[in-house]
Image 1 (cartoon, rainbow, N blue to C red):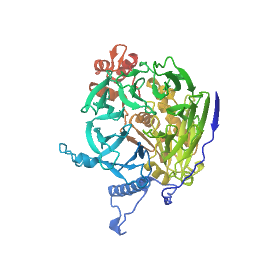
Image 2: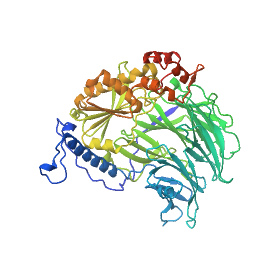
Image 3: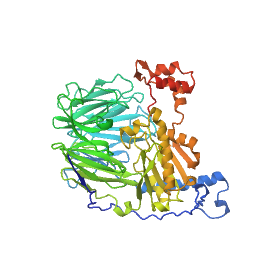
Image 4: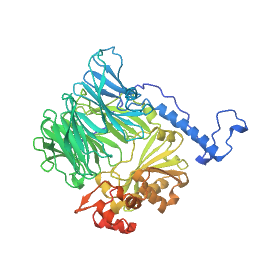
Amino acid sequence: MSVQIAPFFKILNITSCSCLRTRARILFPNNFLLKRVFIPRSHASDSSSFPSSPLEHYQDLQRYFKRRVRSSHLLFSAVANYPMVCGIYHVYFIERNCIYRIDQRKADSSTEQVLDLQDFLEKRASEKIVHVQWAVQRIRLSPQEKHLAVTIKEYHKNKQRCVIVHLEHEAVVQPHVILTLDNVFSFEWATDEVLYYTTLDCLRSSTVFCLDLTKSKKIASVFEEPKLDVFVEVAVTRDQKLLTINCNTRSSSEVFVIDKDSLSCEPLLVQRRKPGLLYHVEHWKDSLIILANTGPGQEYQVIKTSLPEPSVDSCRSLYSSPSGFTIKDMEVVGDFCVLTTRTPSGPIGLTVISLKHPDEVYFMELPYWACAFETKRAGVADNDNTLEFFISSPVHPPMCFCLLPQEGSVLSAKDNKSSDQLNSVITSRLEACSKDGTLVPITLFHATHLKALEKVPLLVHVYGSYGRDLNMEFCPKKRLLLELGWALAYCHIRGGGECGLSWHRQARVEGKQKSVEDLVACFKHLSSSGVSSSSLTALTACSAGAVPVGALCNLHPHLIKAVTLQAPFVDVLEQWRILVCLLLLRTEKNGVTLLEILHINISLPISVLFTTLLHRDIHLCY
């Protein structure tokens, strides 16, 4: 196999759509402490205009930072991420909870409103939701652009609704809503008249329904998953040829496929569920291209199997990543398989494999600062031979690019930010040596040279649970902190998924202590590298990321000055004991259910309960 390394592309045709004013940098003294900063009020500077109490002083600070955060949000509000959905005749886009379209067949076509969601919902006489706000979540066009389906979600609630709009290609007939469906989670069009979808019931998705608009809006169940720990969703392959029914747990997968040209046939099973087997399916010609964790070390590799009789067991291996490289995602673009890959040093890149000649593989570097990668979903009229994608980081707004795999080149969108604006932020990739010798990656964003960070405030981010990566998408609040002189560190500790599936397995159950050891090593390495100091360091995490944070606070409180936690999960065993009677999940293992075990031992001490769980081979999987 010959692997070619292609240097990162040159940015082409960059013209900013709007000139951003250079923002004055706020310089703080070396002994800056946030709690001692005084922000005067905007009105007359007499004695009554100054804070008279600590509470009033805090409220002034709060108002000041709210203004700065709002300004930062407005500055980047024009950043486009998935702005358009391309149909055969029109281009659709969302603006302020309204869906609009523009006719591509006319050079001077005006914007046409397809649906005003708020206005539509308020007109429903049976529901008093005048003051309820809804947000658009997902849009799907039928193959010939006859219908549009959109899901909307009520703010701060789990209430979801799918609205189906009948479209006409001529503006004489206005688009109109023909049906609404409640609690819809995932959905895809099979034809212009047939929609497959799943619903949420108590946050669980287990049934696939088929809506046939040609038969008086008949709805039928086509698939039902009996196991309570399995989550079901429908999707479509990138070439729009197959519908897939994905049945996933945290540790295993089972996928069924439906040919859009043979909807009357039963869903075809790709591979029966096996413990520990994870896989994702794409379509190419008469074959299935599968990303499965059947590679060396149970890591992901690309395999190929025939469509008439698919099986992961009897497949051909197309590509396994070299040591140190981690496969994060897969797309099939024309005659090429494109893998999102994390390199040993940390940055992400693209590995492109020819499906006609699997030995032809090349790797494309992306910008060093790129931390988040998201592909634009292929529309019904999009070019099959190109891949549009967005890259970003917590302090770099999303930038759109287009990959031409056959030519081995990447083009930059015209409205991307200029390189001068991007170069104002420095991205450093560090590695901390953990207690057992494992090197733990750290991503550091800062505005000044690394040697000048000794006295700057530092915000450290961590998660390290469920095999999930740290959220590294763009956030205007993080960008504001950088402008205020902060440094931002992201610790990719074990338990997360940054360095592959084994990275998660090493810090599960009895190995969870490794997450804490990794986090301690990251703090010590940042300190020894001259990045900030313990008196200027804050640590932030959310949900299960609070577990290693809580352990760090107990074991090494001297390493940090402050902690911020969002929806934290810090007392694992106590929560399991208190909430056991509310558990709906019944994970069967060795003939005994988790619910039964916990019910029997509900009165036992926590240590005995934990030992019982481990001896029964029932694991707390975080």
